Image (cartoon, rainbow, N blue to C red; front, side, top):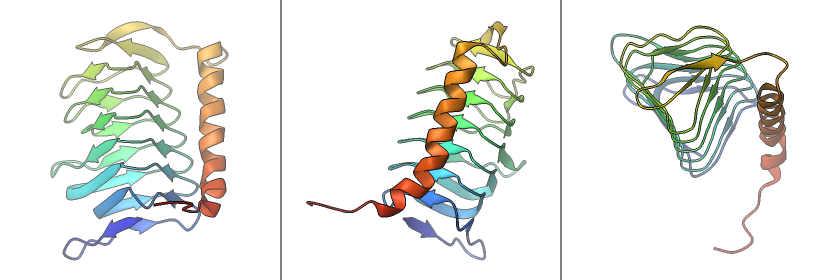
Length: 176
């Protein structure tokens, strides 16, 4: 992994977290227990603090960038899909951020929300708990029930990525 101190800010990474060697973590960042950070993810706390809580995952190509007027918080058991861009103020526990989604500066994603693939949440937009938002700009689509198939699938993904924090420790290069 590539972890960079920036001035006096040294990333804090839990021992049980897994940061892939091709991911980058910079500056004022705190990463919780059993967090999985995939290849080519960039977590850049150069303007403000970023906190990623336990059992969340940051998939391939995700960018999380801080702001100087708020702490960027990612809650517990949050799934951030491939190539998403996160400039938001907060993502609540148990949320799912779709592949290629864009969360603009100061947006707030509530607990249990699903932001659809390729959706864009405009600056300072606030979502309501356990809803699905889709489109550009992202708009309320429908409720996101706790027992529906998509929620169950999301929980399976989360469990799989938590397992990856252990499985990937045995990763080895076979050819370069």
